Length: 167
Image (cartoon, rainbow, N blue to C red; front, side, top):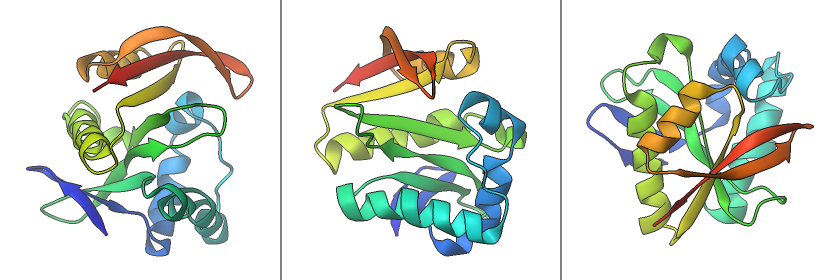
């Protein structure tokens, strides 16, 4: 299911057919360093990740992490979407692109589309985002998107920066 489109991107629900791409994305050194090693190494691991993560959250909340693909070719380049964690009152913006697609404006473009959908389609008035302390690229992107630094939060056993955006 397509959630939204931009001039260059299509943002859609993940499906089991994305398993090979998910293995590639979740094993990128930057993903492991800046997010977490999800230990997704096989097709079965990827299908379990998709079923228990994005697909389950679509069913439970209506939103989740979406696949970001190039509109012109359909090539998957990353994920961007909203997570709803038990430990946070608000939905959390998450994104990750294959490194070869960094510095092309795709992260900002997909995040803006997801944020618009969050507010318009789901009535969310506040979105948070979390970055590791040393992830300056992500912190900078969040500021460009209009997020403000709110403080520190512990996640995955370490302190992280917490940002928030109010619509």
